[in-house]
Length: 286
Image (cartoon, rainbow, N blue to C red):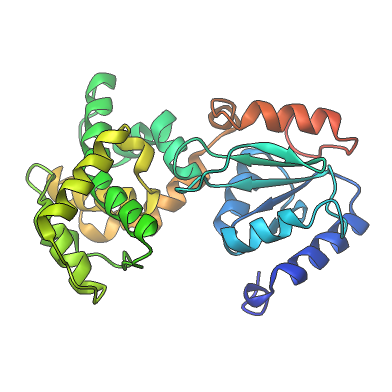
């Protein structure tokens, strides 16, 4: 995917999908971004030429809404991260969309197996499975503060900025505890948004965190940022440069295997649709 492709709109992506369909009478996957192409081509052993990146969920959903026109047919399967959207796996005009159960597919992979895989890669001494689970929950709890503030931002349409957060401004690396007041002050200031009625907003954030388990509102971006901080500071496992989020994300994509996908809720709808759609499947057996 080159720099020009990144600016193709939904109509252009649909035209690209039509060209792919003309060339390949096989099952095609339509995904949000280039990292998803990397992941699914690895996990499903499907040719990259059978996967279309939409460079964002908005474009993906616009292309999905065009089915069954423009070559978008039952053999075109859309894969979407749930984010905080109210959408679930289903079929529209014969076209399947599968949606992750957690915020994004990386969080599902981390929860299933890959968090333990990453810890074993970096920690000097292996941890017992129960301890791994405790550490995962600890980091999810820390990341869920950001997840709740993100959810608050989306529900109130205030467009807070979560890019390049400096986590040490509100997280204590010694025990990975989070100062909610400081996190709000920092994120609102960074976003150039006035923090009006701070106490009331803090209570709303606490209520949002109480609605669901922490793992359900955590975005992998923030989780990996916090995992980076914990590996270099909390666990003292490695220098900061050896566990940057980009490396951790790449570790997820290259370490994921077919069995990891089988444990997800999206797998059975995907498998059933592939079997019934009438197009050949050219990946690993489902």
